[in-house]
Length: 310
Image (cartoon, rainbow, N blue to C red; front, side, top):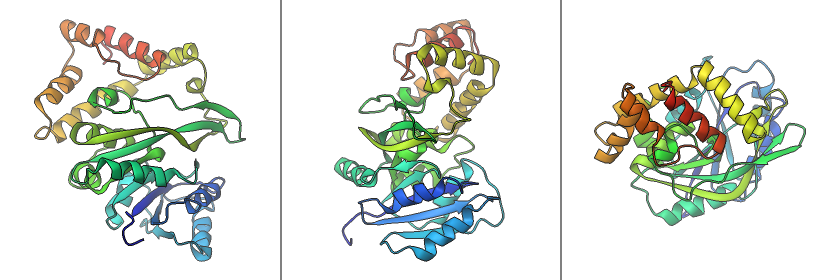
């Protein structure tokens, strides 16, 4: 494994005793050899920690499992992921991991192969694959939506092309986007992908290499038709604060990286971060590039632009 790039899997756990065994089994079954698994428990009240400790004690694979000390502190998400990145030693690549998903055996193998093919160790580079949605009883719901082969800033303004558990990224991304700056409170997947889109490369792999478990109490309109999804978007995004919070996150991102963003990137961000005016609302309403992958989401965000919600 001397010439095989190293990969650290970063697993943030919390009350995952019911599901974490299956996820750990899928991590240990990865065909890629040079893997270490770093786990931070966020103060679970069930048997999550005991299960992890049992896996460590009985691990006969070549993959190292490390349970980090949490100091009795509950950080929540995404801070628990950021803390793992601060504490784990350097590696060539890092992979976010949730406690209740299932990875296919070749997931990391393909990620490393794609990232190595890019040859961009000196720039933030991120990879993500496709996946499938299933219920916790094994019922198939849908496939993840198709994504562009190359992701740009426009694609990560008000949309996250990939969930954290399918993202793999390089050491430069860890340094430049997380360790050398304060990523704030924005979710780790959106923050990292937006940074990689601006300052490096994002590689999208259409292969479905993981299963995302949608628990029975969490299956929503997102897993249904576009019409139901549109109604859900309008209800939650017009009535709630999610989109206003997203705009605040864009403003924060622009402030953090103001000296690194190109002129065109600054111009794009400024359209969506500046205070609303009639002209600006119209420019956003008729913005020529698509901002979300699913039609219902695209219609919803255009309505929000029209009424001046964001």
